[in-house]
Length: 326
Image (cartoon, rainbow, N blue to C red; front, side, top):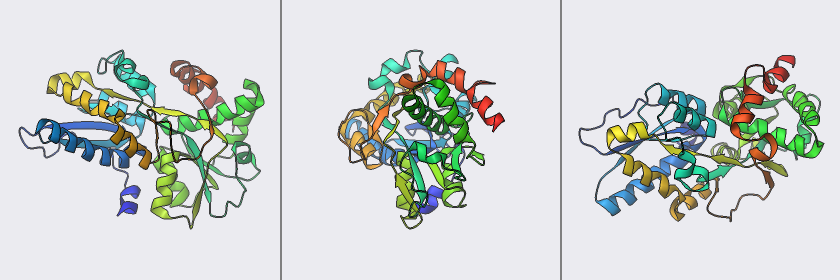
């Protein structure tokens, strides 16, 4: 059953389909890689809400790429909260007046209750001997990653590789050279993190997949370790995962207090433990069973998101220059 669910890639759900009149509801528009976590968290929070208030609650999920989810909310998806992969996707909602301009200050850790990082999935036996980022430049190796112009996970992949190259090479010129070689090994750009995983695991494309850490562990759980292995590089980026209340929606629906409680509970011990079980890295707990690695932040290797987005992914930016040349 888990395998069937993981293979399913539904589009964003139509809001409140089949809801009974007067039923208390909440809709969370989230990016794909949190699908399984939120299924469990929603059940946990609904139980807690019932115990605290005596009120029954139905929480609906909508999942897709981070950018696609932001566009859906902009186009009218009545989500009470969003749980996305990139802060700029929430900033777009803030610029449109859907989310408060100070959404980062509304919750601890800049409204990021958990984080992940970027790791590698390789074929069983690790035939290419992949241990770290530099091993990905082997001649003939085929690398699978989504398109960073449209995928939030792919942007974290990009900045994980960029950050490694910048820190080890010592200059942006060295980082540019590394990224040129890396993209030359990418045969095709998928639309999102889970579709890239499908290409690698199910369709057998490529030799290495760049993946969210939690997605890599889930893939091992679903498909077993007979076909794939997980490699944690010595260094990678700390990908902070933001959440926010869609205030224009919650004010109209009268769900502002409920939505805020839903987001605040993500920082409580039960939810943080649940995040750990789903192989995320909770921001309020320092201990984890996940492998230790040296992490760096986006700000340390590319500046803030506005600068990073403009320089790397705007029309004619660094990515376009390298990809078109490759």
